[in-house]
Image (cartoon, rainbow, N blue to C red):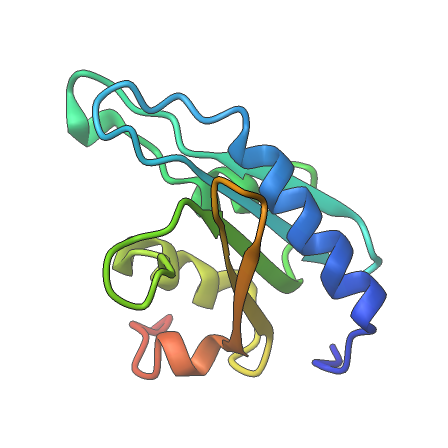
Length: 142
């Protein structure tokens, strides 16, 4: 799988994550997140965070999108974009440790990972790295 994706593909992935964020069910944290994964044949799957009053039953947007793709038979994903509301500090959210570990199961370490923050006025900040920059020491299969 190539990490050299076109700007058009990366933009489409970021757009899909931003659209997915609109469907967030986050009545407890009020923190909306959307994610989009790209399969090795160019299909995009999206997911959003879905909270529950019992927080342990909450699912993150990234895992939601990955599990949709895996449920349809995909085992290798080419890229992932996550879109959050701005956060204090640098203004960009980031996938949690559980999501990062799941990503390592289905993505190559050099796969593109885009973190997109969309402000209320529609302006975007994008932080693009590779999965290995977010999860350098994953728990590996035995």
